[in-house]
Image 1 (cartoon, rainbow, N blue to C red):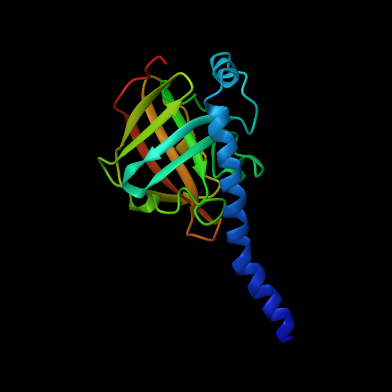
Image 2: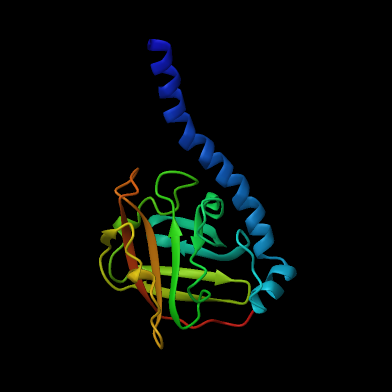
Length: 186
């Protein structure tokens, strides 16, 4: 019985360590891909595949600097953060939506609950960059609530989502931001 408990404890403690190590290796590869001419061309032609580098997200207030991939499947999110494919590309008009982990795979969104109005979020893409400003305090919705990633025609916004509370998938914490800068040509 005690050996079983010990094995379970090691597994529970070791799993986050393993996922963070895995995500660190993935991020190194994604940073190289994000800078490649091939990715720039795929981005411009909108021919990105699930798991491809899409944008680098920087959130100075909470120390986030991570490459976001295309897609929100379980395999894509092993990179730490992924772009909802049904939403516009970063820095475009509409509601750009990104999901990220809070407790595993580098936990890039571990502290998004600390963001508030006025905090800045920068997205750097293969073709330019833009800045968003958090417009309201983070809020919580049921896990199946999809309206937060719905289209916002004519309004450039960014939505970040993550599981809530930490370690549970019962709800989502949501951060909403409005674009303050425009995309720049690179």
